[in-house]
Length: 195
Image (tube, rainbow, N blue to C red; front, side, top):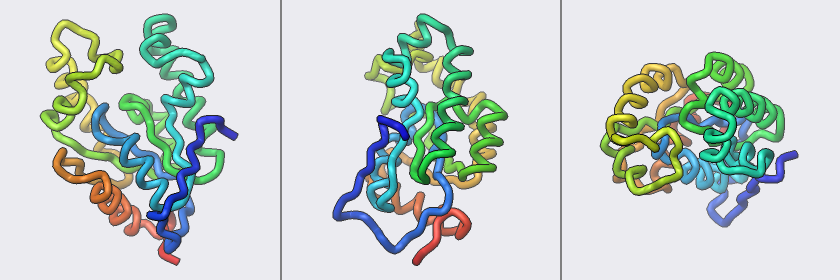
């Protein structure tokens, strides 16, 4: 069992749902996967898992340090292993790194053993959320906005293959974003069932 598992039970827990599959939040950096994921896990009374945090814990290094020391291909291989392990553990909410869903094997694994939910945000929303952070190794370039735009343009068609979509517009509260994800999941009784 994972050491990073955050079993977030709160007074906001909605015991009226039964989660049958792990919900995997996918999307660009800055889409809100971690914040929405934590709040969603608390609402449903299930564990919150973060694949990046798991990788950092196992390596005893930050993601930027892993990228710098071992390179992106090494990181992506470890990321696939961690996602597979987390999908096999207790059902919960799994937040993944922005590039995780790009790998065909990850998409297949997620669809077979869980359900993917794309937190879809436009480029300006994403830029406003990440432009003041130095924790994104892929944006450590001379023109981070152009880099983000390039990543966005390449990744959006892949994210569009997600099982479900929830709009992240930059003005909606985390609580309302959780409502959007729950509404999307409610269309899949094989994933989330009202008791």
